[in-house]
Image (cartoon, rainbow, N blue to C red):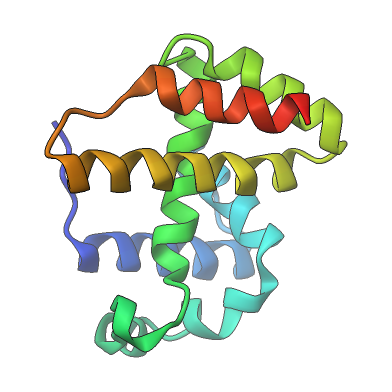
Length: 143
């Protein structure tokens, strides 16, 4: 199983950004990452300097959004939807996307649900609750 370090993730997204700017050929995963990078032009300065990206601290204490975590969550949600895992995420994501008329905004809302599920599991010491995650996304689609 692939388990990249924080630095590996940062290097990956910075490399994708550089390849996009140079119009180089991207792998399928890089293409997906590049699509999300294009949706977040506010990260361009960060992605353009690998050394600065590696050195920067995005701990909770700084109060800053971690762009690498954010982009990684987009990729994770894409993967979940593509394989419908946990079961029902594809239908729930589709319903939310249709309601919001924006796949990007739907992903941000799904991201909040995913983060909440992870936080709850960490806090309680219990395994991830995929059903609660799906139900949270469904509730947002039904509002």
